[in-house]
Image 1 (cartoon, rainbow, N blue to C red):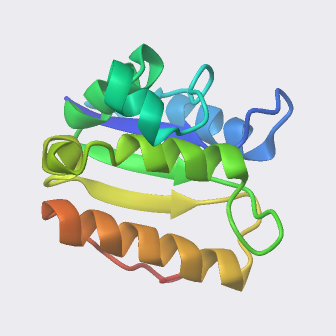
Image 2: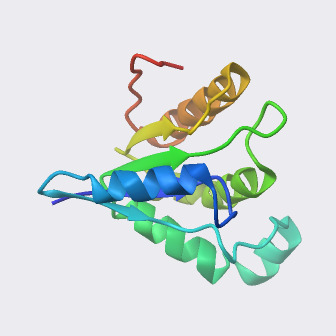
Image 3: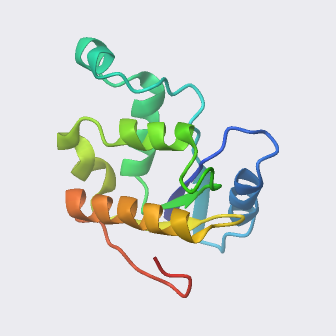
Amino acid sequence: MTRIVGISGSLRRGSYNSALLRAAAASMPGGAALVVGSMAGIPLYDGDDEAANGVPPPVAALKDAIATADGLLLATPEYNNSVPGVFKNAIDWLSRPPADAARVFAGKRVALVGAKVAEALRAYLAGFVAWIEDASGAERKTGPAGP
């Protein structure tokens, strides 16, 4: 069974990007599943807190879900020509500690979708995907919308 973890860049209940992930999960073909992960409960990144207490449980759970998945689907809105702060914060936590990045992201195919993706956001996310690839050996593909 192919297992993909989807993460919405929005916490809003009525988020179009969260709805996009739910629709994708409901449309998966046989032999594949899309599990929608959550950023809920992830605290603001604080290096002092990380040094004192390690990675918080909601972050560890999301990292473990990604690590055991075959791929990662990121669905995010564009806020002020970038990703929402909560999404960037989750990405920051998912990359911590740096030595754990390969365990979480290595060999993952990463896809980016959005209900509306502005060109500036596409460039930002392409940089994030390139970081995943460089940090962990993840597989980067471009499609018709390309980065």
